[in-house]
Image 1 (tube, protein in one colour):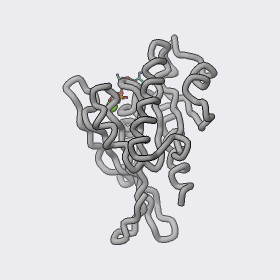
Image 2: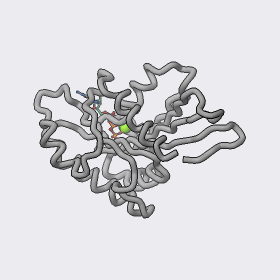
Image 3: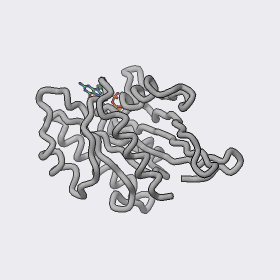
Length: 190
Ligand SMILES: Nc1nc2c(ncn2[C@@H]2O[C@H](COP(=O)(O)OP(=O)(O)OP(=O)(O)O)[C@@H](O)[C@H]2O)c(=O)[nH]1
Ligand SMILES: [Mg+2]
């Protein structure tokens, strides 16, 4: 979080983390398509030719004003593919809240666990930890028939019992609920 005194803005950084193909970019695309254009910037995406995130996606979202200051949320997604480790490290720096987008498909459980471990390592590089930072889990792809049950996902991915949302990002289900929780968490630091 930082204050831009010139423009009287308070900037919060919210990062969508999680395994490749989990649906991080889809969350941002849905928000972009539904939110009042007056309240958001353009969506900036750096993609590979296979439509995978290469560096990050970025969009700014604004909310009215609080005590004369205007809260602004910088939403980023990380590149989930294993080889873009350094990109993830850069994007996670300075996050005020993290949304961990887990892929509910049964055969993706190990990738979710590995991504959570990767997140811990990246944060440790900045002397930060998941115990200190506000974060939330989004169990995405709930529409798929062989989705892992929520109790199993909770047991494997949520030992601290942080808040979670269920989502179908392609249909927009749960996308704004997730963002709202993350915004509340980020702002609770104020
Ligand atoms: N069935 C289903 N498919 C989804 C859902 N959310 C995302 N997808 C699909 O999953 C694929 C990957 O989605 P992305 O949003 O690009 O995933 P990502 O997490 O940004 O992936 P990286 O950029 O590689 O880290 C796309 O084909 C999406 O349409 C969902 O809730 N249900
Ligand atoms: Mg992506």
